[in-house]
Length: 428
Length: 184
Image (cartoon, rainbow over all chains, first blue to last red; front, side, top):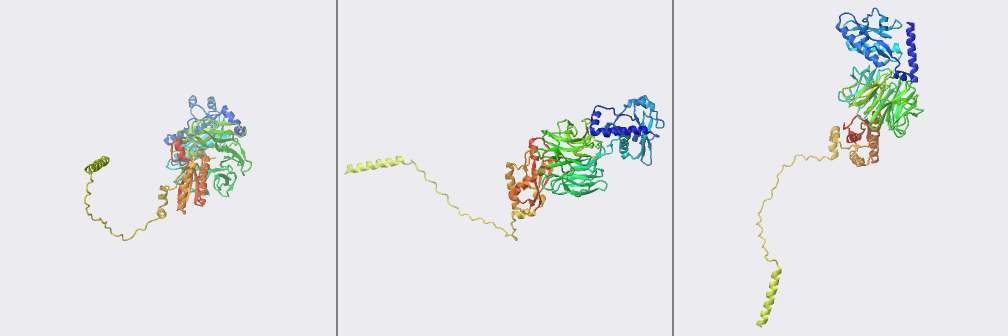
């Protein structure tokens, strides 16, 4: 056991330390073997159709999650035919090792009280022949997926030390019910739920650091584009700033501040308030347009857009508004910077002749990588909290929809299809 | 003597012949005018109105309408902008001049100017650009004597296109500043 946790800790160590040096980016790209995971069919107790159905759903979700993480590589299903089926009471490490598994997730499902099922997941170190950890969840059908996401979260947390993303949410704007309202969904596009009912136009949502609040722009009051805070648990909406046009909210990762753009003083400037929306202070004082603030993971710096040079370009400044420096060059239209949670990268939009593409600027090497390559408008990028994935808006399939893509331009996938969907923000 | 008479006669005859040959040969006599018939003048008989309806001035008609009715008639005309620009174009100035004349005639009116953009700008930067279009419209009206106390401005960015087409004509329609009367 100690050995394993040491190994896990080592893994954790190497990941967190390699990330800032951008080594993980390279190693991942060059295919350092991901953890070889055996994820055989779950053991279902008794002849219960309910448990059997739950087993299939949960296994599928965990499998999709772990593949998406890129930390694990799942063994091909046909390998499991070479050995005896999973017996949770008696784990035969040798057999699992013979099909090249390093980690085994052994799942068991049984009927629970009422409509519940009980799902138990145990994780084994095959080579070390040890049990690592286990989790037990009780769930009704509506939350089978959530139970699966929780188990996958635990596996990433324990085995890689990274911040898991499978229970994170994406908030966005959709007109599927007639006018632009806020919606949210799971990270994988499931469970799309409507959040606001203002019957006018809600716009540009952003998650608070704890995921309990959403800041957004609303045109619900005639003549105002106000910035509001939606408290999800209380179902309460409170105004932050309503004079002029107020937009582009961004909460600091330390949960203390809320930066946003406002024209309340006549020109688009960046302001910062406490996370509850009180105590608003102006950060930029420039005749040009200053917009799109995005916090660094340390909450000590802010990336933003300014056209003070004549065209919109990306700048960084200290959280107090000082020490402004330009970081984007070579191009005439850059916008919507999003600072990666790993701190070393900024994804942004660049417009070239009516085409918008996403680019990643590496702040350490000043190297720029093109992320999207389509004859379309790709915009409004937002990072997943592990810094591996980006959700964005694109009209590449004709209508405006949400997609995710990995930081190395792989795994493009579409999340929405109903109505037009835009302005996504990924929870932390 | 008789000789003299003959000469005179001859001269007269010649003179007569000359005159006759110069004049139009036959002058038709105009037909006599038809006899004028005497006709009695028709007098329209009307009942005198019991109450005389007061005539409303244009201002009074305006005040009697709801804001919705007024906005439906859009008495203030929108203006368009160049791509990525917010300066008032020369072709927009006469429009704003007549908008200003209208605003002067109804001095109690307050308006909201909405700035809009086409889809070829990013969401965030377009909000700032739309605001600038609304502001330069407000400033131009101010230069024509319309107090900015009567004007509120707002930006919709590219979220409210008039035309979903993908042509320059559609984009041009969407790059606009338009008016909404919010108080009268």
